[in-house]
Length: 512
Image 1 (spheres, rainbow, N blue to C red):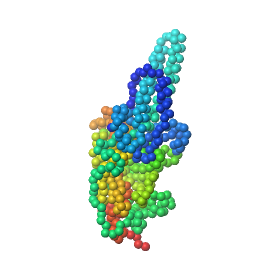
Image 2: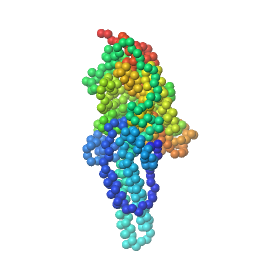
Image 3: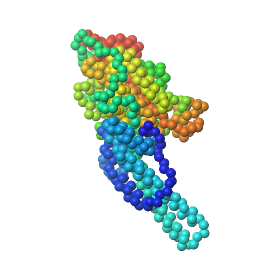
């Protein structure tokens, strides 16, 4: 796996090179400009880049050096040994990661680290020589030699820190590896996995959800635009009950399958967003950042759930850990426009129920299948017509090893629209979030063991993480209104939701 392994720590092998050429070469590398950040949070991994200035400052202002706020456990040796495969993966996923620069920086890092170790050994040798009784002139010579070695070592150690930072920043933009069965190409190359139901035949002129919502007095976009801006909305009357029903129904159904319910924070630290693979401060980001702070509004509960065990060592006996989380989500929807995004389909704030799993590496493929099956069963029970797609490489976000999308038929919009996705992120996120487990069959279950305090024996391993949408409320409301509309303008409530709506079976027009 691309992200398997730890930071490489070179041995203290000797070198006969002087530190001066290394420092000159290192300086030239450090002066090279970093490539432009990607324009979409889904296009590549977060680079965790922040200017060395106060939070909220302009990313382009000042001359502060770029420093990583955190470090991912990246296996640089694996990347170097599998250069061609990594390069092919970067190309197929349309990533702008600069592999050549990463490998160049890594080679310089190894060489500079060896030189630092050589100077440390020389300094220690000089110190040992000074322990005995020496002639004053000899001692003075050793003092001068030790002083020169110390000054040179300080300079090289400073260069090594800067080189390590630059290497980390560049390498964090390399996307996860890709499942061998994932089709190569753009979204149009995605492969149909399953199709459920068929498009309903209407004997009357159908309406889209905007017209239906107006006639049923279910939402108000105009007032929300005045209060908050475009792409916000008020839900009214039975639409409120419908949202609550969808949330409670989804949490109830998924909880029956062993998922622990959560309600998450909706403001998180920018570093957690980055560790999960999103770019909170990139151009055209989908993330709302809070000015003069290191915090962001979440675009999905995947982020706070992913961080719940950050910097922890979990017991193997506790895995898999399954959560079903409710939250509001906030997205800038930068660049989104057109008739296909109108109404509730693409909005800045919405409610969502998200599934998330932490598991052992050997379980993640099987659990990915479990997640997509849960999604398919949920939507089939509502009576929706949908298709499941194995998404092509060009449509995968940086963390995803493989992703299945479900697109449901929306007759009023006259198109299929994405209503959920399910991603296996392998250890891409856990290596950034610092989430490991310690194999130990005799250890009692624990889900809250902090890093360094885990009981048991054996080396720790990084968990795999998976996420999947149970319910994205606005798009499910679109599906329900448009697919279950009747000739008289009423809407039949899907049977599974009726117990959560006080037994209400039909949404009827309001007559004044």
